[in-house]
Length: 194
Image 1: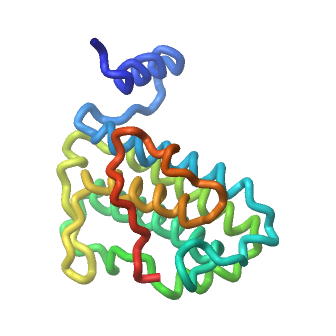
Image 2 (image 1 turned 90 degrees about the horizontal axis):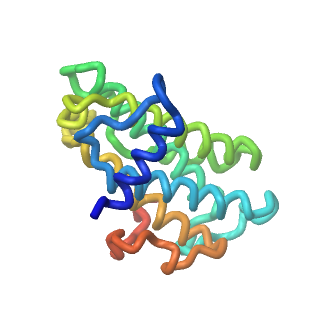
């Protein structure tokens, strides 16, 4: 019996044909699927919110929906930068800590709604391109951040998936546990350092 994810990948390759970008054979397919589905789910819930309710609180006490969306956008941007750093074969540490900063969140939080939505969408597309451009060798790379923390590029998809699914529920925009992929870990928690 063929794995449904493998069957979907084969069908996609048949539709897209030559020249399309695909994940490397050793890429963490399940985790990438969770992250990509989480991106679509988060975006669907975000786009269902009117601009004037972005200032409302999320399900996380003291955290607005706006700040939560900014975090999700800057998180994708950060992971994309870390992956690009690793793919370039840089030996020196990444020039900053591998965390979204308070300054980024403060700036993102005051953006107009269309800019905040664009931040999330654009950063997610860029991250996906970085993942698609990774070779088998790249997936084995580890980047040290500016604080000395080691970030395995193979872990970025699961990290992103966890943040997106937890964030989607924290948006308080109709997210349901029943919408989680059936094989996804159920212990979701949005980063407390916001």
